[in-house]
Length: 249
Image (cartoon, rainbow, N blue to C red; front, top):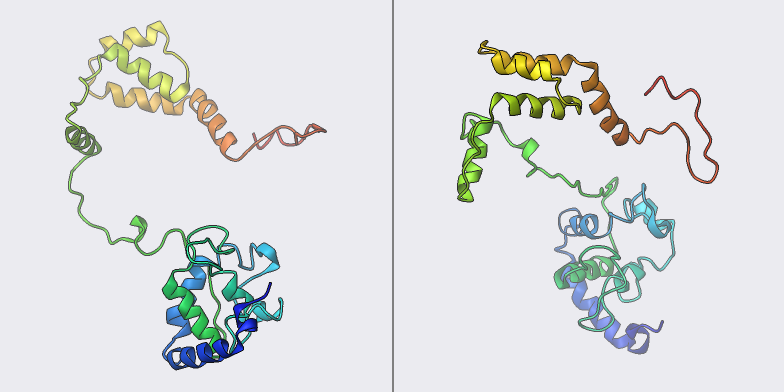
């Protein structure tokens, strides 16, 4: 590919001179490192190495093509021209995933390269966490606005102009709880005994009994085995049985 700078070398000199003036004010760690982490490190990090390229450290960059970054010459540096569109309005070659560099970010990259591409000693770039400091788990504890889960449910329903369902009768309640926890229906004797029970803690005792049932473990163990991708064989074309896997199950 013929770059514009090769055709108009005088233009390159002018750009270098202008960018060098502003490059002195660029703080790589503060201004450009966050851009590279947000736009490049997702694919080009030591763990993924898409295109056999990591931008995590200066050493990583120096192990690839000599023209990836040419200090003092942003226009011929591959990192610059693959991240900026050749024509206005076009999508640049990179990043392959996510949003491209903004005009300001592209100018920062160009100015940094033209200033000699200085990289602070020992600085390592990291892919940004999908859960930053704004994640709910990192927020300080606070008093809940409502005092129970039911209150939150009622509040959400009211926002949609809906009303909470009426309380289930005892026959429905034992059937729902038993199906939900064990996957099996209650026996007719269990239903009749629960309907006639006068103990105010009858429901709590029902739940305790269902949780202690082996059927509870069988029902929910099946779901958790799916989560850990349990299988008795290795599948594919040769479906070899793994004879010693049953103790885990």
